[in-house]
Image (cartoon, rainbow, N blue to C red; front, top):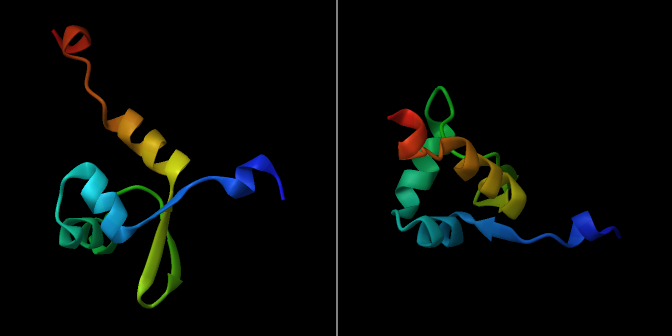
Length: 70
């Protein structure tokens, strides 16, 4: 097992709690077209996981620096 294999993963509920949104929002992000949320892995029909580094990269891409916009 490599260091990358031991990385943290989030469930839909954990990701929603971390982002302070409802879990239904996270579910909607992965079912709307085009997809809107971070990359995910559907483990089963009832379980979806999100890799911590994917979530961080997704948030970094969405970051807006007000000084750069002005």
